[in-house]
Length: 225
Image (cartoon, rainbow, N blue to C red; front, side, top):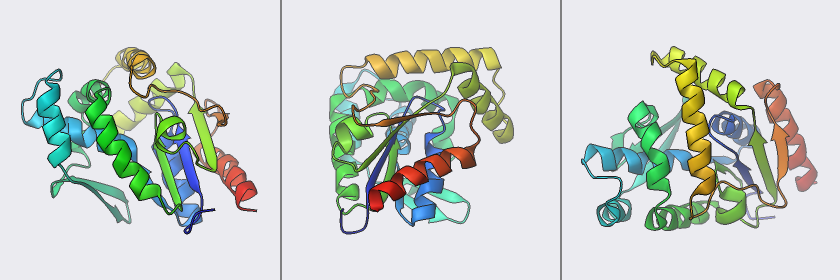
């Protein structure tokens, strides 16, 4: 075990409930929570804000090399900043959501952010969620979870989340976006969405959040003991 506890990797497709579950699991064990998706979204936000084309690799590489992404825990969740600008809500907007796969597929972006993530996890005591944590970022993590859920269930979750945020999108559009995102994430050349060989698969389709948290917590406790 590392100095501060275990490394816990939680991977899975879009809207499988990774970040919600990862936050709660981290809180239960008093571990750090690292939302790697927010890091990729932060870079995507800055790329779009600067009017950079998604195929301009050189300009995007400069952005990722010169940007500083930071997290600030609050009573109501984690705030995300890029170069001091708070972007917690901005990175969840549709333009970022629809562009993040393209930015995430760029080698220089993944190399830089993966290195940052490895450094953050070096002492353990961390729950990290993403698409390639167990397979690429933390291949030696003691606990690897792969969350799955049906497309219908994931679209329904995203729809309800959007309604809460006042974002108006039809359920059918969301289903198609999730299918497209799944395809892009699992077919990209660099670190595609893959289940690590030693990951435990948890199907969350018919599970409530507390149930998923309990399932993962039991797996962690087994590894601690």
